[in-house]
Length: 248
Image (cartoon, rainbow, N blue to C red):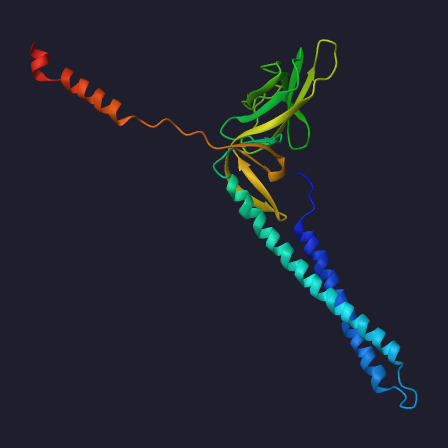
């Protein structure tokens, strides 16, 4: 998973700062009250000094109000994150992400090459970073390609369902230079979740932060049947099955 600056951590720092200011504010009021109560009547507190103390007190009070406002804004932002991410549900998405779950006997990725390559090797890594399978890519041309892994390991074994695996692409051109590539997850967004107050989207068997999305499209509609064509086909079938036609 990626590290992110969460609104939860920011809210915690604001709350901690607000509590410290509130404590200092109360201490300041107590000291000021004690000073006024015990001042020498023949030598009272200088008016300029007293005014400066009142100004400081007003500044601290204003800072407390500002902290309360920041806390409210951060809480509102947390709610907006999930609401905004929910708008992606039902759309076809492409994300720069390499982790997916192996379930129902397969795991699927896409990979993109920035140019034609002469040698492209795909590696499947387990959660510990160990390469469990390695082999040639099905396509070495410039562009985006799909790849499905059936769970077979290089050593001839078979992984169990439920594990999380990542794909790695090693591509070189005819001169032996590296060809830029990236691993993608493509599919329909089926749900959104919040982790550490960061919105994540679910695509197929993968879950990734919204920030990893690079493309969104409206889900392609399936072709609707034509009522007139269906009626014509039924009429032709009925004509063929007509007993008079069968006897003739």
